[in-house]
Length: 425
Image (cartoon, rainbow, N blue to C red; front, side, top):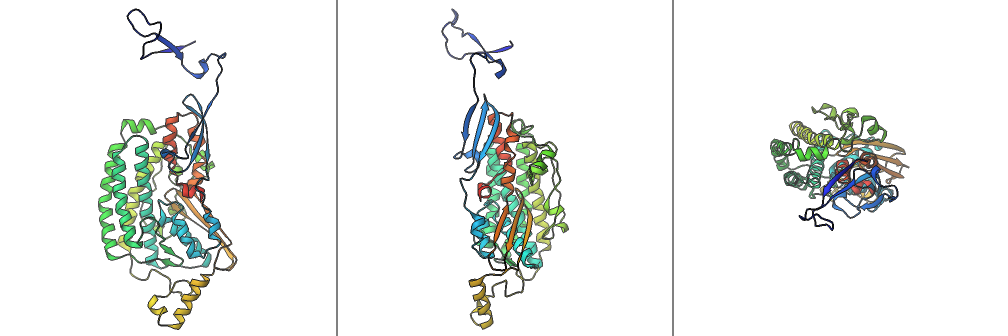
């Protein structure tokens, strides 16, 4: 039976006359364990209160030594019942609920639910609103990926990229606050338009951001991409083939890192994305390292889109010219009887949708975010259903972790990029 030996670091009974410790044989693998001694797998709980689970996620891990045999994710600790709440809210009142699903990309969530409601009602938004929504979505993609870059760096032992990433994220939060008055719960969209137009300083500051942001990405690239420790902790870890990624219904960076070039902005374009010049980064090996490279490159590409959107931002209104959908200005509502009636009906009765159903999917930072509405002709949906990319992507964690070490599970879980507000809903 093959054995490897280790020197004990403490004095042991039976040491030789010189006090040198004995060389004690230990099993080389579980197969070398004496069958008479027996043994069983160990079950441990990772979470739900653990910083490396990135939220109140509980992972029940079955171990053989330090090797992961099986992982069972337990969700539901953050369940808020958003979809059920939406059945008792007007369509515009649903927007604040979406801030609290994927709370790292609130503006993008706002846009997703507005597009579904507008598709249901047959509303065509204005050109300025369309470009501003593109800006909102790409800002959300950048801040979401920066949080992922920073927190995953900490999980694997690199602290400086976290500081760089969050410094840039703070700049975008300042822009969001300038636009909406809020940093996290933005509630940006309205059916048929937006909460507010951007101030002039917003355009100036965002343009300055697009010119300087790539410098920080270059720094992160230099520190991590060829770092021996980072490469050793991420390459060939949590591998998913293209076919496996498709079978698990993955989307977003998780899918593209496995070599599947699917991006809603290119393959099912919305908001005029087909007119923007940008690339879709695709991985080759489907491991944690490729997911890192894909998200890093997506930050560069989102920055390109933001620069193009600023160049083409047209003048004009941000809301459709329909008093049945958009509230009239307060000055008109206080001085014109007809405007006051429209204002009253909208606030009290809401915007009514025709009988029918509609689904709208967008490329959220974590994958395809879908919103599905069923209408019975009233101002409140009969059914609101979210397709949450993080929840679906999380289902693959057991497959990815199988056969890896427990320490690798931390990297694998981080690479999924979950937000429990979206997972539990």
